[in-house]
Image (cartoon, rainbow, N blue to C red; front, top):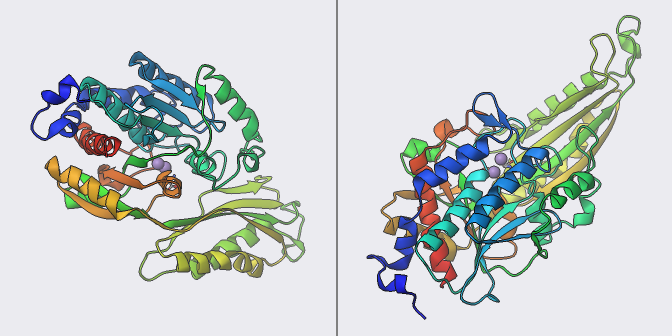
Length: 427
Ligand code: HGY
Ligand code: MN
Ligand code: MN
């Protein structure tokens, strides 16, 4: 059955019509509205997972969705699904989205762009009166950043079966709030969302995201077609010594957790040194207790974020972490816990090719490129054909309030997304 609109579709058919109906100003305005939620100085946001700010963002997103008559669904870890029906309601849907949670000192585009671009695709389909064989859903995955409740990509991991919900419920944040309590509040805030199961069949998933690096901007290109995502491993290190008086305790008698932690980080730096600058080794959190000028540190907690595009190198370096920590400690106890271990992924060439074709038919210059950041697509790639579209961000800055993008680039990425989603939904 061909709809009336399809008779009048412009050159390039309905796929081009949907791309052409992506509304640059509506998309930008929604970013600015979302940026008011958890706004911090310098144009940044602090909208961490399962907080009041996360709930407010969910309420704002679903208010826009309801205004258009889209259906709202949510699963037991709070992944949020906005559905536009297809001709065959039983067909596996096409999903597009990302995450709405941010870093504690994050930017206005990381994650939220993919969710708002997904909603924009639904709006453009609606504005075009487009009929799709498959349903199309925009999705917001819970807790992609992992800054509050580690590890990241938690919602997409649980959805895809890479981690069980039960393994996440007792995780605590740095204020000892338990995930299951914060999750219960978030779920309760969306009472009329239809309950969705984990790992329901998906025909394909496409995620739009800012690049979070400088390559597109340096190349002067508006679109990146992502070929895959490098691997990541996260560790938590607990160094335990003995707090004591800074004035009376001889150095020979100290079990100073700070000094041992420094020695451990230095040993890790040496082991991770890489002339080609490909290894990504980061200590991002470093907490000293009791953290007082005149008390010797009794304990230190720090995190390790280790990444590499080669699975074998990531495995080799990651497997050495525990031994390096134990070997570098002098007087303190050391406990190392791995919280995340995800090898690199490669996206299906068929999907990559289709995204390239969409960008080309929209006359948008583009290039294929890997992703240094991980995304929910890393886990959706386990369960369905998956791809990603990048748009530039200013100076490649991200995870920083200075993160910036332009209305034109955001709209260009959403147009490639709209055309691709329409093609997949009728494929
Ligand atoms: O850490 C990451 O790669 C993602 O930005 N959360
Ligand atoms: Mn992100
Ligand atoms: Mn991020």
